[in-house]
Image (cartoon, rainbow, N blue to C red; front, top):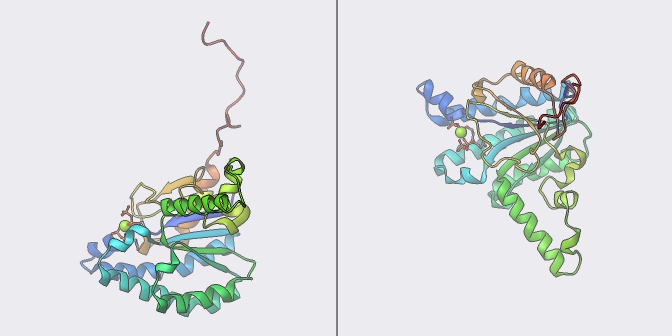
Length: 251
Ligand code: IPE
Ligand code: IPE
Ligand code: MG
């Protein structure tokens, strides 16, 4: 059995647009409702003792969306940060952002950076927003950085292994928590969409039909219950099955 509470939960908050369209409303209405869901999910994760929660807010591929939609997403991000920073601080939440944050406009950085700074020494839930994030991009950066270290004579290709590789990823300062235990995607889509490909190599996946604007704390709790029933094997043989007398199946 998996241990009861996953250390690191990653969520693809998907389905805002469809949620709104089904109600005859513009897609951005779904983003408004969706952004309002984050607070309660952070609260419950923190209360349950989850150590890290990583939320996919905007992918490298989402830059292809119409500018009008992107502007609404940035506005909502800023609103969330301004409105909730104080409460996150009281909850002892540490905040991080992973992704190509240098692509974000200065006005977003002007809100984001001070909040990240303010919460940086907190020791409770490690909340991370993946913004302008793409796993492939992350790995390309890692490869480039390592190559540069080699060229500068500070590293050698022979040294590279899985542990060292992690030091070059955007999640390097997650330490032991970089490994995703439970990976949730809302809205019924069953794909990874370039999220945490390295870190989720052995995650348990839960795909729920609920769209993000309807995703409630009880849905996170039931995903955690399902996670607790899973058997994580990590390539081994597992403990769930009774030992059988060995027979030579090739005889
Ligand atoms: C997720 O909802 C939010 C972001 C990608 C920013 P979508 O906007 O992808 O909603 P659907 O998938 O089109 O319903
Ligand atoms: C993934 O959702 C990105 C976020 C939720 C931020 P998308 O809606 O962009 O993914 P695809 O395009 O359906 O794969
Ligand atoms: Mg989507």
